[in-house]
Image (cartoon, rainbow, N blue to C red; front, top):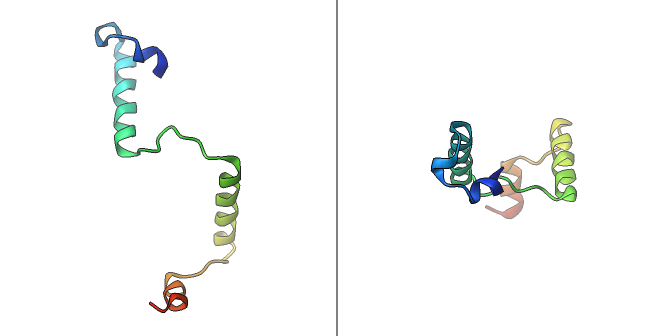
Length: 70
């Protein structure tokens, strides 16, 4: 839909298309990564990290500071 809107004039848009354009613009401003996809290997690492956290396998912030001597 975005490609179609790139060539359209605002006056040619329906209200729904105009609202969608505003929504996408706001999301891009709020989150510069909006619309980007994760590479499969990064997605897998994130899922594994969540599983580890859920299983109680994590390092606290205090432990990290201690190991870094902070």
